[in-house]
Image 1 (tube, rainbow, N blue to C red):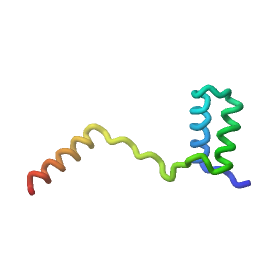
Image 2 (image 1 turned 60 degrees about the horizontal axis):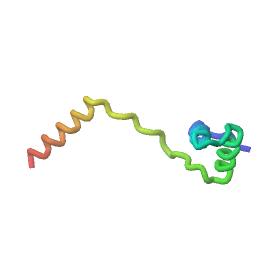
Image 3 (image 1 turned 180 degrees about the horizontal axis):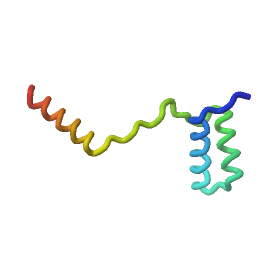
Length: 72
């Protein structure tokens, strides 16, 4: 059996946590998450999440858009 990628491991662990919050015991949540992964029902993100922009980056982007808008 092929090894799982780190992103697949992360998706499985997040699903286990979500199922436990819904009230399933840990053993059952783990079994459900691994079955979902095996059956292809577990969504695996294709690329990592982008980092959030800092306030300065957002402000700079906003100022650039406003400057470009004034030039029209």
